[in-house]
Image 1 (tube, helix red, strand yellow):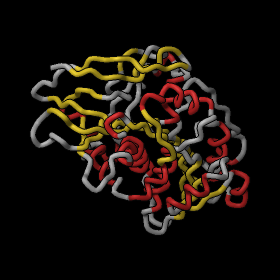
Image 2 (spheres, rainbow, N blue to C red):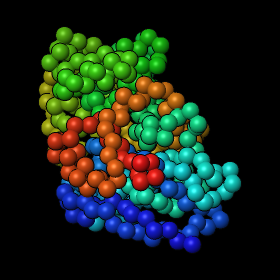
Image 3 (cartoon, rainbow, N blue to C red):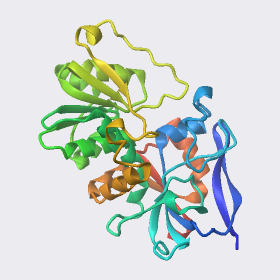
Length: 330
């Protein structure tokens, strides 16, 4: 028997709406999930909302259960948590994470959901996709005990990276952001905080810099912070924005490196040992750490999501991770 549901669509750049959808009955290897919470991945989803996905990246940037095509109309998102209402007995009634767009109920293959441990709150679990990105980045970057690490950009991904690196013995971690209010976030994550102007005295002194601000100024600062022979790991997605850098200083003489990391592929260092599903399950387990609650900075009902996206895209709604709650949670 089919189920009536509702989904959020970007119907044209800068405008979204909630549309009805009919969800089919699940097959023998599928589950019906009733949404509890979803999270807005501010960087990527606002680029999608603005219609700023570059032409040559439209196939690469498709979400696992996306419908429609860029720029619009498109149903996009990938931070969903719900409860299994129909499916195999071992999943029935379980809270699960799924890389699914914002929708009140959906049917997906069993292998698309990851059970959320009982000691991980459902709302916190929306961060699983972001923590998975941070986990993959650290597999790429391989920070060492005692490293001095800066994370430039205190958004969802940057904050997640900072928290994970802080767990490595001896690492000194500084979260760098232009917004002074992010100092409180850094304190809750157990790391240091600095504004860009504050780190002038420690330029050229970092073993690793992870860049997540999606700005040219942030990437330039990241390079300036590096010690000789060190690396900037760039996690930013710039959409169709152009990035200009000044490379006439120490970039060549200090043999600096810029390396990209992206969650679409398991990091080469772990590719032979982890599948995508195993990596995501590990990320969900890492969310037992209550410090990640610091990233959850606002919550709204599903019906308000079209207006919420406008506020996130134009910056009038400040947020690290804004979550969406569905009717069954109110």
